[in-house]
Image 1 (cartoon, rainbow, N blue to C red):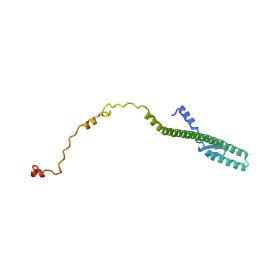
Image 2: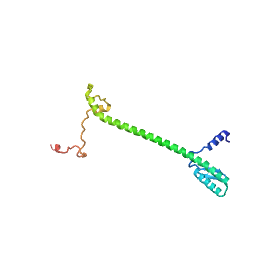
Image 3: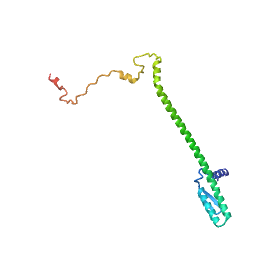
Amino acid sequence: MRSSKSRSRNKNNRNRPSGNIVNRVFDSSGPEGKVRGTPQQIIDKYNQLARDAQLANDRVATENFQQHAEHYLRLLSEAQREMDARREEQERQNRERQAERDRERQERIDRQEREANSGGQKSQDLAESPQPDVIDVSNDGGLVETPEAKADAKPKAPRKPRGGGRKKTPDTAGKEDGPKAAE
């Protein structure tokens, strides 16, 4: 069984209006029964019912339908105002962001131009300024000796050439090939 506390919390959440009233579907309980639809559809329906009541010479019903239509007209116009204000705020923020991007881009271009223009002056200034003395401490140029470098430093014995591709058979194993055998 549910507690009364959770039931009351859920009850409050049901009556919250959704964000976009313009496209929201309403159930209107008017004098002629329920009218269902978006605010614009409900306004059109009540205006049509008011015209029908006026043609039937029912002034009370005409006024009643017009009041219902006016209620939804106010809801719709308020939602339109809020949407317009939100849109204007977003456009203002977008303009500000774009102006900031343009300003940063211009500053970057100006800085690059200054660096390009002062690039020749910097090289002249460096050439004219006194240079520090460079002392060569060792022959190796200050490199650190690593185990890999030590292994490469050892002289390698030259490799012996492989056999000429002919295999020695038991009957030719003792004999040497070529001109040396003839001598």
